[in-house]
Length: 557
Image (cartoon, rainbow, N blue to C red; front, side, top):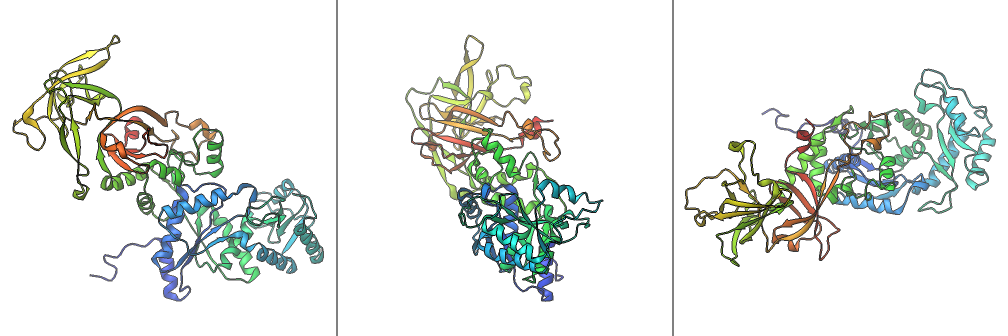
């Protein structure tokens, strides 16, 4: 066997790490996950978490959790707590919990250093004027008339900004880089702006706050981050990231970009997600239709499924659209191995077994998970009156030879129970089937069948006398358009009006009577469900995680 035969393939970041370790460039992996605490984490963050924490774990390094809290008007402790909760739910522990605000004094001193080097200046142009003078990538920008202020004047003005002497928005501190650079981020970017807003950690101490590009790389440097990993939209920021570090002569953290996670039928813009919440299109950040980690958790997605999904997507250098079917496959694959099977009837149709004695209860043995013997079995009461799905009976099947469920004079097996035959039925005034009359064959008990009969249809069922009523929330994709990045109209025009169907009186097998929030099950022939937090002593609420098969593709062909 060759040296590389049988070895796992490495993504480009892993190749870089191993190459640099072999060359002695870096002998330690220090990463960080730096979320803005201005919203809940979403599926795109899951990829960044898995990459940053996973690489540190793989190479014996460390990963910090650093909150980039430089926009106080949008940040809150609620978001910080939610972010920490989600990371732990995914199964990761950070080395240090840090905040960009930890470095406000250091960043301020570094800004002073750049002013003293003639590499930064205070500007009183408005935001509109600054944007106008930057021009376009094909046109050289126009230098601000304040670009050549004296160092002394810039120092006095910047210290006045720090002391709160000026009105919000009246002055900014800009880096003096290159107003002719094709990369627009290098055209004298703003480093500091005046914001007289209370900060969730520093209170009213700072009336000025650093911009992302000034705070980010320097925070990496303070923490000796050897691999600053971010998504491709920050690639054009890298020259500025390097410029600040070089000019300040501090630890040389290096930025590496990977393709972001673009998922079909999904929006991950925090601004748009917040709009969905605030305008009531969803019930909150943890609505099971939301692409937030808290939404996925409430819907029944598992940490293992999300991490496996990220690994299947891989780490690439080019953006692409990922089929949401891959995510749904990942959760089906995980829950198929874990979830116990139960019977649940969404649209009940009563079946009366006319030759079954009144009051007789016979316990059937149901297999909890056919792929896991250790899951054991459960007792299921079989009685004279049962419920099956309304859709499991047709009075006149369109293709009788291909119809394997119940119909007049047709036989089916009730799973774990007996073979029954429909001998009659009742209708209401509108012609709807309201009740079936059937007979059972006593020689066909499951596991003890001596009849020699063979039937093609097998149905789920629930004893009418023992059924547990439940509310089922059937969730579907929140949007009807796959690539929402390309729509030109309001994204709200693409919301799926059928993203939630509520079934208030489903009939569930009695084993679910003691089910608790977060318990997960496979409803046979229907899908995977999780008990919701809205459940109480007198109310059982279950969310559908995913159907057993991809019904969406079939529905849209």
